Image (cartoon, rainbow, N blue to C red; front, side):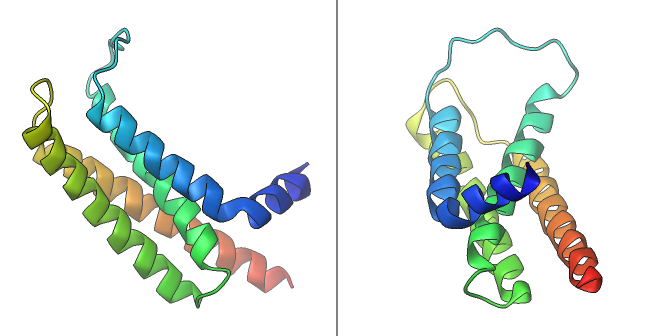
Length: 129
């Protein structure tokens, strides 16, 4: 099953990365009529998870054509600035969202988690070969 998933992702990594990028923009900028979850800081957990997934998929895409270190750096920096741009757009284009430095911190934690997961997972699987 994991091999099937890996093969699906391998051939379509750019499509998945772009879809996740677009989905984050939509969720960040469109007013959603959803029930709020009654968990302390649920929004920050959402940011962390979203940016972890975003960064992971971009790393997965870039590592096919770049050295791992460059893929990690490129994906991490791009995801970080993407998050900042979306925060600025939330504060300037919407009347129902505001710029939050804590969201940027949560995004950064997600980015760092993705980099760590990918780096250590990749390093572990490389040793098995």
